[in-house]
Length: 342
Image 1 (spheres, one colour):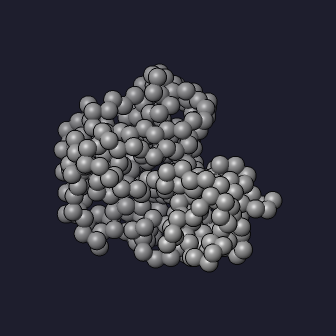
Image 2 (tube, rainbow, N blue to C red; image 1 turned 60 degrees about the horizontal axis):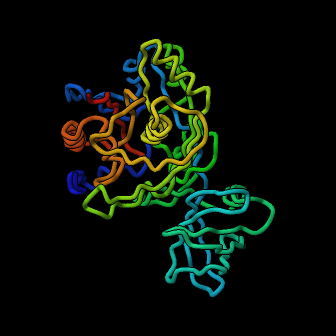
Image 3 (cartoon, rainbow, N blue to C red; image 1 turned 30 degrees about the vertical axis):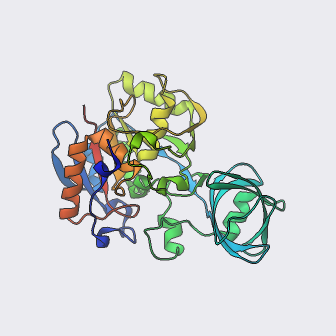
């Protein structure tokens, strides 16, 4: 397939700039991937759509304040977006500047944070931060929330709460696992009471999720890598669910990618790893039966993933329906529940 096969026209006013007033009050488009039947529902209806014995898998990554502004030692203004924290003092970052910084150069960020450019790796720079505080502590104090580029306002206190899932735990993501933004504590408690199991994994969403696909031939696209961790308790829950005939529901494309990557050899394997899994139509899913996800950008790898999961024609029809029915799109927008196509 070609890149243009995943294009569609989205009116700009359907790009959600703020979240719904109540997390679970978003709309939900339910797609039966077998029949292609669409149903307009509300997100709280997942309480009826998920059955006792099903397992809901959530990504507990926490979004860090990954955006910093500052200057080079030569005085040029720069913007830094941390892509991945490597250890206590080093991180990989995207740097926007009039002239690319060189290895050995110093950056002064935020309120006087010093960082040395250690090396360049393709489009990313390895930075070493001075001082004893550690990268995560410095970002929390001096950074700002990295809202996606299609959200036009500066982050405020409301975003710091709502661009974070209620179960966010492990810091490291530079973009939210947005399907999870619709769950609130009351809905999660109701799902547990209904007999739906809930398990967790961690995949730190990288800024590469917003990078455009630059080649028409999708076989030539190189997927960005992301780190994930799958606990043994979640692997045990997956096996128990399968043995009892229940379904595995992934909350978000990040949960799906981690689960499918961990099962690359057949059965899911617990542990930490990096995945550059690129899911295109024709991919054979091993673990996930249902996917809860937001609406994705045209020509994006995430749209390709949901097309593989729900069926290309079914997803095209679903997106046309969502636009006609004025659903809200992208990170702060509405959601879909997709039952996997054969």
